[in-house]
Image (cartoon, rainbow, N blue to C red; front, side, top):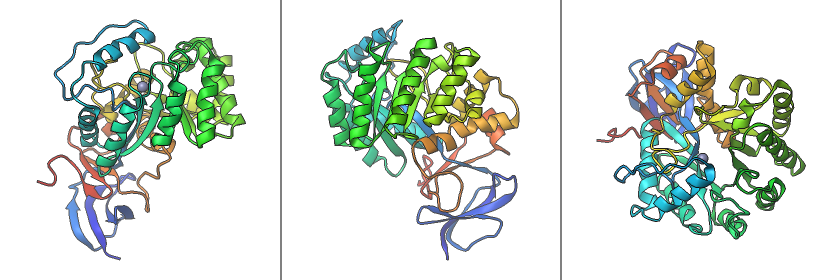
Length: 391
Ligand SMILES: [Zn+2]
């Protein structure tokens, strides 16, 4: 069968030169023969790597498209929630514009899919969600977008949010979120009751923000795992941040990680500093999936962030003291294979998968993580979507 496009002179993951054929947006073959095709792209020896997958962003929060807004300090999560609301009330550029700019920025760096947590509270209602659903459709050609209905102001401390979360799922959000059941809402059971009831009722997954540290955070993780197991939601639940996993003694870590593995709960980390970070290799060796995301990019929570997932993989290495090629490749899997799996996508450089990949002028995945080359040629479903490619 004739392919639509063949990428020639490409460095394959096994270190050999070859070609990749694409038909109807799907990888048709990977190898050393040159299939005939309607069009040919010469990769000039660049490495082909799977498209990057951002497991955690906030499309509605970004302030891209606005003049730089000075950060309002907040020492606690609760203070920063209020600071963000203050800024949000003054914004004249809509989420459709700001979020769109962020999607374009991520795509240009090789990201082909993302999970976005959208604020749901009694002040903003479902407005952010509606904007993100518009973005999901508008940017379908660049990005696979999954949306988490996220109670940024808490659930119990903002009465009415539980109904809004239900309505958000009915309106098209893909997963239900949560936020510090103890630290923000002060009632682990009642907070988790609301989140897991919604997940069970609608058959959707869960992705909770958990900043609560130490033994308290670990207790919450185990509660989340118990509920996941009893409701049969195994493999559909993720916890973002889970700083507590980096703060436990061996016994507490072991029993918590074992339960996370049993319930197949994935842990998202941004490899943050200076707070503690979930230890990647010990979690992997217990069988826990770990993935990465950018989280805040130029928003009320952080004036920083550029959405570069190769840089994020490098930060993982930095924080975990990884230096071998094998370790750099492990960090790379957190921004590709692992986050893709958590999102339930078929991905990777395999025949039959969507032709979502990036060409990088490096000799290996390890070099890509170390070098973070600026030059990235991005293909989404077999189309070259690199900015300027169509000109
Ligand atoms: Zn977040």
